[in-house]
Amino acid sequence: MPFQAAIIDLDGTMVDTLGDFVVVLQHTLTDVGCHPVEVARVDRAFIELTVGKGTEDLVRRSLAHAWGLLPDDADVTGALPQALHHYHEHYPRLNGQHSEVFQGVPEGLRQLRDLGVPLACLTNKPTAFAKQLLERKGLLGYFDQVFGGDAFERKKPDPLPLLKTCEALGTAPAATLMVGDSSNDAQAARAAGCDILLVTYGYNHGHPIQEVPAVAHVPRLDQVNWPAVLGRANG
Image (cartoon, rainbow, N blue to C red; front, side, top):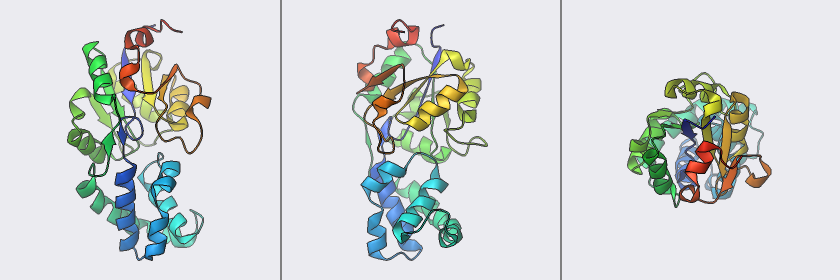
């Protein structure tokens, strides 16, 4: 069965958003009273290993890292509501200001649309922030649907968001290709019954993405032979 639609992740797949996360989180940590030395611990290297499981998880782990505690420590849990409040205040203002679209992404999306493939963006970032970022980066118009981590009861790597996105696209999971950058995406895709194509430049928690089974591992979205992949001509 050829693929009839594609679901594409956002952070680490289409846009390098680490800079946004660093700036927003450092503002957030300052607002909750962290010392500048603690704030500085939440840098690009830490975020690259941490991002991908939703806003609450990211903020919780950032607080814990800044304070040298475990994420489920009582001090971290107690500070989390206030930190999330400040995070959601800062993010809309800074969203996209310190991020860049990965090379080849607009061209790859254009190739897919030229082939008539319906596209959905599925991310663990809140839906409003995802739509805002896609619009600011000139990518929103490629997508028929955009769903964030608050759109469904559970987030990736749970399969539910993929299953719900397939429903919205009107395609069966087996006929829908997931495009992502991490084992989170791959785990969700496998559990939902979707195949996965992985980019090699994203955020995979410090592990080589080539170790994760996929239809293909690609360095750029505009270098994919989309007719062959969508038709499954190469396996």
